[in-house]
Length: 225
Ligand code: PRT
Ligand code: MG
Image 1: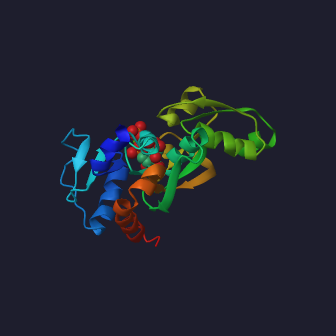
Image 2: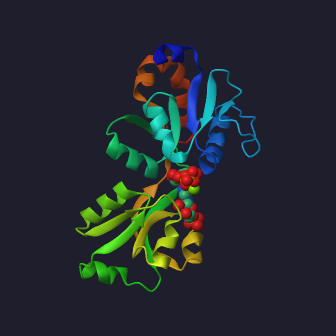
């Protein structure tokens, strides 16, 4: 039922508001596709583009992989941070053909400026680490042979060490000003992060002719082809 309905619907691209939307627009424009909607003012969640066969849906950053995996969107743009967390729960569910090189940042371990993190690691101290990126953090500390207690948070991780919830955090850092403003320092890099184009596996087969020009355009615009 749902699949048959999709044959007539335009190609659907899932984006999140903010930096991913802002940095994907120029890539679309390079492909000759314009978006007229002013997202700051409109509350619309389905946005038309100048290409009648392409529409954009606006979802939370961490929901992009879910919409694409289930085929509610054919393609999407999501940070590697979000994709890593999704992948652990849904292995192999998404095709990730293109690193778009946008929304770049680093996933880091950060701790209060006065905390001797390396010393604690060396002594085998059991640290409490607050993060939204539970899977990536778990893998990182396991690879170092460290025992940590991970506390899942949904945002404002920087607060956790300041109020005694955690010894350290794992969070994204781009300019470093959020860490500085909270007297935290990055003590270790977990991963380099950028955003990827992701594609629904079934759509890649059933809608290949319609999808390929968009995939090619993204490939060219991101300089990865
Ligand atoms: O905001 P929401 O809860 O809806 O979701 P989200 O925070 O995941 O979405 P959004 O739009 O903020 O981020 C989308 C994607 O952008 C992320 O998944 C990353 O892949 C990427 N990205 C790139 C970043 C950053 N840079 C970044 N700096 N995402 C978040 N930040 C945050 C970081 O968490 C920290 O709080 O910005 C703060 C640090 O920034 P600096 O510049 O002070 O270092
Ligand atoms: Mg955010």
